[in-house]
Image (cartoon, rainbow, N blue to C red; front, side, top):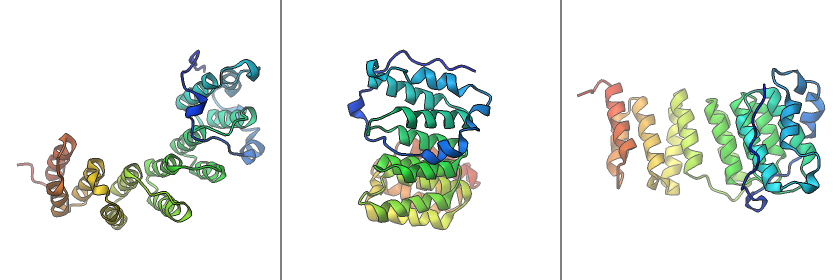
Length: 244
């Protein structure tokens, strides 16, 4: 299998937020596994990492790496990209770590995602949201809340609407009402109910759990209801037998 890579990218190195992490453990215990997938990771790696980096455009290389991560569809490919990135890059800025965390989670390697995240020295809100959203996609409510609480206790950063929406989505999918109420309470205290997407997520959650009164209260308190808000109300009333 081959992947067509872009010839260049306008992504400047200066725009990256962080990158440096040392994940030698993955290279150590997976060096034999990397090359047993259905694809040829060597070809992918040699395509996006120039052999002579002194004459390469850093922005173009980074853009190609991000494209490769976005195109990756197998664990073996992800390991290969990760290992080659660690081996080949010398700069300290970038958000490639976030992309790899998301990719590991997407491919079901949640432990690898957490290990990589913990090894990243410079984590910002995007990093935490990558971890939370990755856990959310897999329905791991407890891991979402663990990351949420860690972010609040270990840093001076505050969760934003992206953080909350990811957790609410996991709570909705897994029927975790109490956890959803906890996030609702945080949204009230943090002033995040001004974000329509957060309110819409809560409306959907309460509606699916059969708490129409709570959903209606949220809807009626919205200063401006958008199309998603109205569609959510129609959907939850229909789901609860009020199609008229």
